[in-house]
Length: 422
Image (tube, rainbow, N blue to C red; front, side):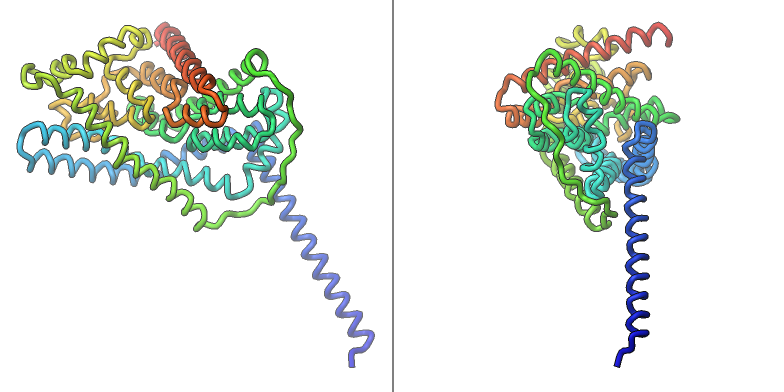
């Protein structure tokens, strides 16, 4: 038989346990609140972004070297065992030079996707959108615009499709138009090649500056579009906020691998095909009629095209090969590196997979090239997404036009001003 004293002791124990659990839950809520304010704070936000980029460089360097070594061995083996002729040149210069120049950056791409997946799965995105609502409205956007803009660091296509969560048509359209200025992961190999070659001691700071310029341009263009181009009413922010939670390693790694698998499929699909096409256009016609490979390339089909567009990009410090890289990037930004890998191949460095050792430009031109790639013409898939979500090709064509003009102006200004001091 339970006595009153025992009942009282049991009630006290339950009350004490409930009070302790309440304090623990309050501590967890306080930690979540402090964490949320820290990662979205305007002062802490950039250091956190810097740490993410530093991790992308430092942690990705070791597997990157291993992959580069493997690709070099494959290239040397093909050079040694294949009989001289067009087939050998296509495999060594076209496939290995093009695809190999991009696949070495797979570890860096996976790390970037890992960080983005962690933010998405932790509940950070929704809370950050709520906290950023006031700032976003000053830009002419909506708090929910923050989610597709951050997703743009991974890929602009799903980011633009995600903009449908924004109720206001004005904010939704402006978000789609500025999203291409958020540097997607496909541009990362281009940055890594040029930063590794010309800014090895300041890699993270240079990369952070590229991303920061993209963000600042997105803010500026959003203000301009809201004021002069797109009309409409704002809508209040209404969104259910999920609690912060620590994502499981299994979930984050699965999401990272799914995105990495898509990247690998690109290696064996569009990038390999495009690399072979670029090699073919740079190999023919009259391959054997010239004394040097450089002379032969200049007189090839692709050399003639490159020379035709060179006057437009020459004020930026770019040569015709860099111009062909820009043109190929219209299809997919990864093609820029594979195209440069094919075109910047000569008899002296045939065994080198490291593209950064083969590009004869100055650090200033390298920085201008990164800025141009950051801003110019979105890839075809991104334009198709803008067309689908906006319901009109007008906005897709506008996005392609304004970004390309803006890219030329920014690169020209930086090159001309930089030339006065360097």
